[in-house]
Image (cartoon, rainbow, N blue to C red; front, top):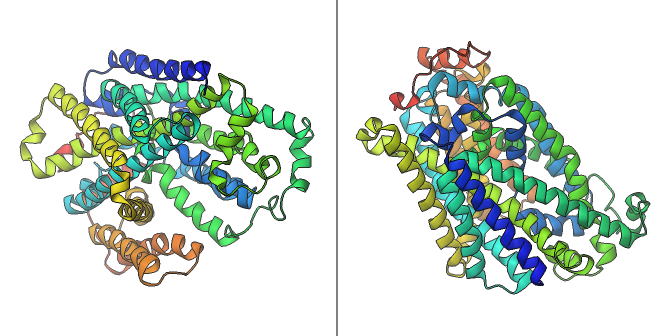
Length: 502
């Protein structure tokens, strides 16, 4: 990277910090910090949801999949998320802000104490929080690796740079800072993605390369299903994406909780679905073209970075790298905010009863401290990545396995058809998903990718439904909550703080 590239990167980080400082003026209490006071417009919520949905894995891991398997990446990932969001725009997204209106929640797990009980809430809160620290640490390490490939910056300095900037704007500006930086990062990503798209088209001979490319690629690269990415795999991932992107991944639930109304959250979900439908076609095109432009790569996960270095002039390389940072910083900052809300509203009140009596200012201070501690701890793990070795990979895999089992009681618990699924169903499904994953992955390995992905989430789903049928639970308070989420109520309706249920 040259001087102009570094200037772009430094300017990018400076703007992110400036947005955080500006957003601080809008933060008066914990509700503003964690849910933007329920005032986030639908278009900003939709963009923030989209940007918080993927990280630098797109430019490393997904680039490798595009290089080796082709167009199927768009089918199982982008199209899968699009359909997931279309489903969620009617079933799940509108219910999140209604939970805030009814119970005053600022954490995605806060309502579970009322819906199930405190033990069920705590199982999901503790397991998800602990594993997310390692997941975010891995993202810092991946981003630092990109910076090392581009500029030769040591991993440690890359972690400190990206993590430090994110810590500053996330801690002082809360969800408003996260969403506004997501907007800025989206614009940067848009310019960077289109720039590389045009450069690749020029290398392929012009606009005609959009349709002539596919005949030049290896066999199967133009097919919707290829290699390990079969119809069964895509269908299973549709279920996983439906659970994850509609709130099973906590930071994405917060984007809907922050919407003013259920209708606004629905529009945000539809907007995000539209972005997932169209934008990846531009973003992934250079990755699909890489086998033609960079044949026989020994390490396909470097294809996107190598294309950037070869096709773009000084200054624009820095812009594309900033776009890569944008994804990871958007996801990790929103992760930190979501985890902090769970710690403050779900975990601490369960172990320290006086937490219910914290003043608004004290709760805000606690939120900022927990956000900074979470980011700092995840950075520490990233800096020690060599020490963790296989353990780090193991925990990242376990977190992936827990997305479905944690999300099933969270999301299905809001729907009337599952009202008889109680605490035993919630804890049983979570435990079953974890055990099945461990069995398939480590006790009976070699079952194939589709089985490894499908077994934990499908077994958790079956247990959740069966326990509800065999041992139905009748809880008047939970029934009233579920019924209240089906439609909008007048704005004047007062919320009852969910913390009182703890």
